[in-house]
Image: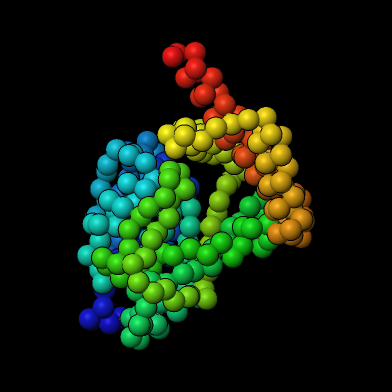
Length: 257
């Protein structure tokens, strides 16, 4: 590894003992690993300390703020951001070493294709792949932005592309997916309310089926078999829940005023 260029990896965690070891194993070759843990109640922090001394516990302020906090702790020349349920493929690691550690990249960040594993198979359609993600950036050249829970790393500079994948073990089963949909839809509805968005019957009737058709037909989710069908249905349900919860918030506001 180059003596001149250092790579940091940052991860935010909460109750990820089932995933975190595989994630850390995939990046244990970097110069610095920083984990920001939101006071996990399982063995997450214990497992992380087997790979790094830099395990910082901080109360959860939201996806964007927590990831930005972790990003600012890193001291490497380049910073790799991963989620606890992700792994860096061997191909991606090899390409980073070739192009960043042993090369002279002219760009300020790298975008990776991310592929999700769900219901026993790798999902290759329906809008879930290639799911391009900016995850490796020069220190000081990017910030986390977006509206919780949909965070996004924003680059101040030019981006290159890594061919190797980030592997995403997204949900353990349908129940976990539904729990996430329930949680994220509530957060999104709250954000929409702050932005002044309104809900009406037209949106509730038409936006969910449009999402299903987009993912299952236009983006060829049908090619992923039954998992592709389930993903499209649950995605439509997610859209329905966001608007239904926005309507619920509007109703509560009107009663309290």
